[in-house]
Amino acid sequence: MQGWVRQPSPEVLYDRQLLWLAFSLMLTGLVMVTSASFPISSRLTGEPFHFMARHAVFLFLALCTAVVVVQIPLERWMKHSMHLLLFSMFLLLVVLLVGHSVNGASRWIPLGLFNLQPAEVAKLSLFIFMSSYLVRKSDEVKASFFGGFGKPLIVFCCLAVLLLAQPDLGTVVVMLVTLFGMLFIAGAKLTQFIYLLFAGVGAVVMLILAEPYRIRRVTSFLNPFEDPFGSGYQLTQSLMAFGRGGLFGQGLGNSIQKLEYLPEAHTDFVFAVVGEELGFAGVALILCMIFALVYKALVIGKRSLQSGQLFGGFLAISISIWFAFQTLVNVGAAAAIVPTKGLTLPLISYGGSSLIIMMTAVAILLRIDYENRLANLMQASNPTKAPSKTTQQELNNNETN
Image 1 (cartoon, helix red, strand yellow):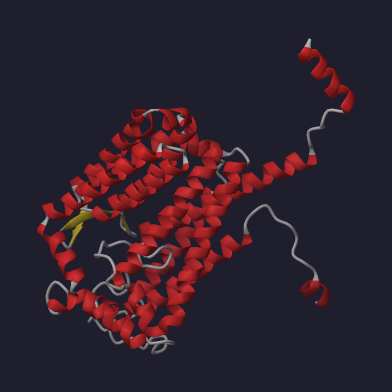
Image 2 (cartoon, rainbow, N blue to C red; image 1 turned 45 degrees about the vertical axis):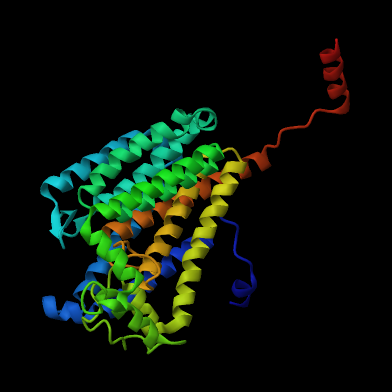
């Protein structure tokens, strides 16, 4: 027993820390969804653990999906990136025809066990396609405007039109920010990047001004207490939850705001329940775990780019930007720092589609890291012999002659 404790763990071809971070976030999400959904679950179904059971099923499906995905070589993702993109567009068309509508938004396709949200599939498929595109067209990205920005933007605009028809501006913004980040990392010209950034911000502002409900979200975000029982109700209740939490919180299960004062307490605003029950300490711990996962993804992407595995590198960096920005938007909305967007907290919020797709992204990160470590191991076991001094001198003489 003592030898087992003292003996260092064997070297493996995957990132243990990334795996444990993902598991920890998923278990934290299960606990917090159970706590936050208890009142609404009792009222809607008569079963206090209804949403907990469904979330546990989602976790099981997510883990099963991850086990399958981690076996798929990156070469196949790159080869079928266009097919994945077309499939996601097809799903976005289907949801507009037969989608399930909630609060005026048609974003879900009913599948019986859970409702599929095609927007989550579209995020990952776009990032896989863009990673493949940046590998195939790296010279065009660095040289010309149309090759570097025009073609990817045409693909993005097709997805954006379908998403805005639902409507789902939050997903469009996440995809746009991640796309900009990928193009910047790929070496696109800074001047073109800045011009496009201003154009993107202007387009988002115009989309906000085009819909009255989006304008109300912005005005309520600027001063939620101006109309605390109207447009600012959700934000004021969320801020009250954070205020009650203090440093160490009211204790797990002791939230008052989840007693149907705070709408969407177990989905979009689960972080407010975390702040009330676990306090600043719990909030800081969860954020540290999420951004540690983001940092691991960045490190994996950097190593892949340095070793010449460009597809894996671009894809890992896109996943890191995606997770980081979506976390910032979700937490910012709960804390009234940014307008509400209806985006989930990665690996924590209730929702089958989001959980399965994000765990798929984590599995892809593990596969990228595995292939990178395997390539380094093979290179170390079969190093290229450096030419001897005599041979090198002969080569130099031949080049001189």
